[in-house]
Image 1 (cartoon, rainbow, N blue to C red):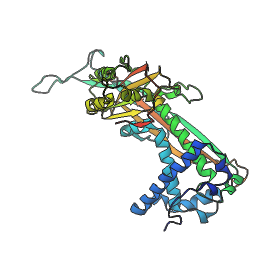
Image 2 (cartoon, rainbow, N blue to C red):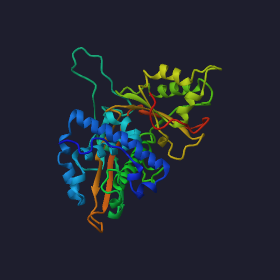
Image 3 (spheres, rainbow, N blue to C red):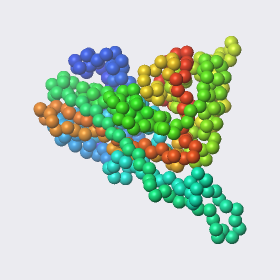
Image 4 (cartoon, rainbow, N blue to C red):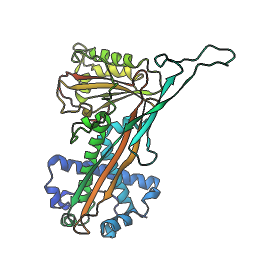
Length: 382
């Protein structure tokens, strides 16, 4: 089916009064998201529309009692693509954990895993035995009691009266579009915070007791002193790698640092030259730490110059796993006054399991002092 709208172009004068009421940076989000929409449309033109989006516009219009003449399957795909990217932009944790993320088998909020037990004394680890006839090997088994971890879900809804929607005359730049964008961003923030720190995230309404990747009870700690001195960040990385060297399980070491820490790498200069410490750090460590990410959500509070954080985590299937109980999705609510009103809820839920290996797979240094709270936005640094 050909596109009815060959290109998305935003013109503020056609957006309606709802757009005029937005703050400047919120208007910027609308303009930036147009790039994503056009990119998605171009993808459809080149690769075709995914099968699950055939007749999607018709289904959306039936659900919302909307006029089907203004919406196309391609437009629904473009909007979903943009919203998914809005979540991804905020959810660094999801990118870090992608190699060990899978759907949960059935809808359950608990995941169990088993510890190994030794054949005699639990404190003595069994290793392969020198042997030529293989008739009396050393043995270890699976523990009788399994360890269980619990997950958590989140929901965020938005309501829009039909009168607000009427202002936009069915434009794709409608209040419904804007509210979905904001809801996706906020959901991405919460998913990110929950992944790192569980209930101790900055924007959690209360601490529900569950832990995340970086505040598990077994997380190791390493030293990192006077980060404003050239060379000390290098020492901090070496200290962190030293904590993980006896973790023999397979996995990729990933670095996660707050923005102030990341920005300090560029502030520190060798003598009076223009060579930033970052260049030397990337050259030295990118082989051992293939991925380094920046996010202030690992702090658990508003970022200051004295609460910066750095961490290394070994990510692999024998280190940890993330099960999606409910992948991010939108659910319509029925408690609305008029059929044309919009009443939608975004939901998401997952379970993080971290296995009690002899050497834990995460090491962290907190309450670090830097020159500034940082200038580098969330994302991958190398």
